[in-house]
Amino acid sequence: VLVLNEGQPNLYIHAAFRTYNGFRLNQGTMADFPKDRSQYNLVILNGVTSISAALGEKMAEAQLEGQTICIFPGKTTNIQQLNEGLKLLGDVQITGVDTTVQTASLLQQGSVLVKDLFEKIPDNVQLPVANWHYTIASGLTANQQSVLGFRNGDPLLARYSPSVGHLYLCATSADLQSGNFPGSYFFTPFLYLMATQSGGGSVFAVTTG
Image (cartoon, rainbow, N blue to C red; front, side):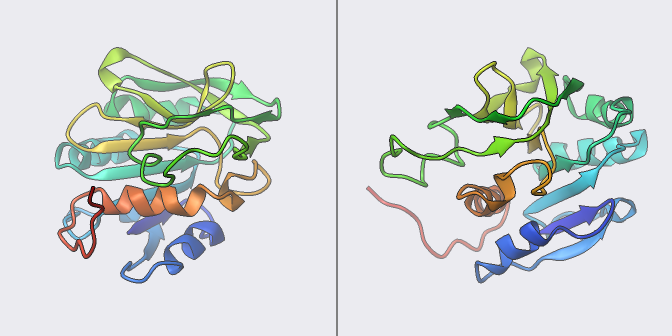
């Protein structure tokens, strides 16, 4: 797993992969997006407030190769700097910022991140709360699936499949100032499944029946 940080490394992402044996976690900056991505199951962009056209093109190439990318954006008033790179990945764009505190009300049971977590979704499962979130719009070619979403239809965490690889885009930052998603039950298993579903051939156990 490669984590590219715009600012300081994220303690919650670091702790998530320290929980499971078998993961190697490398840290870097946005300038370190690798040319050879074959060794990585998952590339995470953490706290990013600007995705340049050059970085967007590198990510688009990685998507064509089947790479899984997850973006936890930083909070910025200049969302155009994020959209510049997002538009190269597919028909996805940030349209604004919602500063209302909201609790997620949708958990997509058919998502690959969710369906193996529970034998049955508990009726009283506590979904994450976001103190603010970006509003995200996408076209049909982006193939959006909301993994976690709000009552008004906005996604909190969504998966996009505009090409061979998968893009996971969180609508808020992965810190407790932005909400409790990083401290929730779902954060670590979701990152684990993003990494294990992509690429690698080191499968030691599978679910049967």
